[in-house]
Length: 365
Length: 209
Image (cartoon, rainbow over all chains, first blue to last red; front, side, top):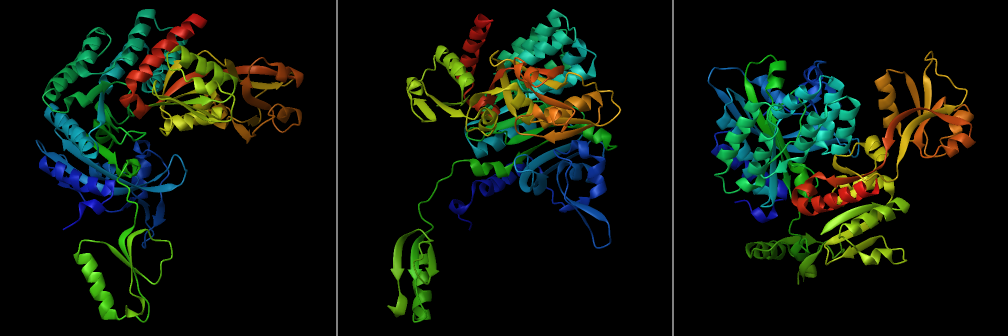
């Protein structure tokens, strides 16, 4: 029986999350640590960083340590009519840290649903994302956006691709001042500019956001608005539905993602701990006909969550020496452990171990 | 408690005055001492003075919920933060400057001396111009005089320093001013307090125009 108290935050999360995903019929997917290097080079735009750890296999083939899990799952699946591949995983990925600029092992857990994805599957994915966050902390926010809204709005405002790229960056930064500036520089008409600036300023409680969206009519795709309305109605029934909000600054790479995308935040962590969304475009680029949605949780971030800090390393520091009778030593250790306490056997009190109680049996005393 | 990173110096003092006017005063900050952290328990706000170029790091990493950073720093380091308001303070521009007689005929690699390597690289990449970046940490203006570089990319306020060193602005890359930034996660959980400050500052910026 594993003692829950000795597990770190991320270890507890792994067990709880796997149990959650299995309830929704998601099967664990175990994959190899390596992929062919060429595979990542072909899809490097999808990766967070294009720097990959590569090495030669014994047969000379160039392999890479996995920088991403989703690509491997998509590659290994097949399109079967009416079937949805539902998998969960817990894997280490190897990426360059933005802070240290050195390679880092990142523990990542997540789920993917690939196949004939319907609105229910999107709802289920959002529910699992919210439940995942609730397992990490009660104080969380899951924000949802729809890339179809954003792309339809920008298509209706300006044809210039450079404007669109810059506008997406400013929308994701909630930067309305620079957005206004580029609208002026690109000759965007006043009404359209105001619509775009309004779009940036609406976020938060879902029904309020939906009411504001109605006022933008004509500039945004109605099917995307209708999807959000239906989804929001379904989410209203959840006990933690109030923590699921709309925020259109949650933007992901539109070369790969489409439709619903989302990000999860936990109070006390400085960045989003969960990211996900629909990525049909990736499957299309990889020659598959299916649709897909999934999310990943970066478990390494959970290290920063406050945990109960103990003021000691062990309950008992047991000091012995060469003269201590081994039978007395083993018996003493057994008594301490059986009594539910922790013990560290040492040759002296070096000051390196913090303890509650000191027991000295040197010389067999 | 709302944690606010302020840039040390005159800009920081002006910015604090805006926070004060927004109802987030902290009288102890005006005491003449060498303390760096100041707190007003009643207003639930804590200010700290940091090096202006470090503000974005404090905010991105969540040590500060909000802060004020120059657009030059935001462009150079691209921190993952919300940029909520242009405070219209500390206005200047990022520009390419060179000796008055210099003409770039585009026939050889352009040597560019700068502290802002990413901004310079992005600017010239946009122009499709081959450059050699020379990273310097100060006294950038002397680089073209000593033939270390052809041009410099640097912040220009009045242009006096350039003029005194026989340099002139050849092109403006981007206007610069102080921006109010917020940590993305803090914005989700302390959004009400942050929005209250943004709304008040918007009015102050408008009135100062």
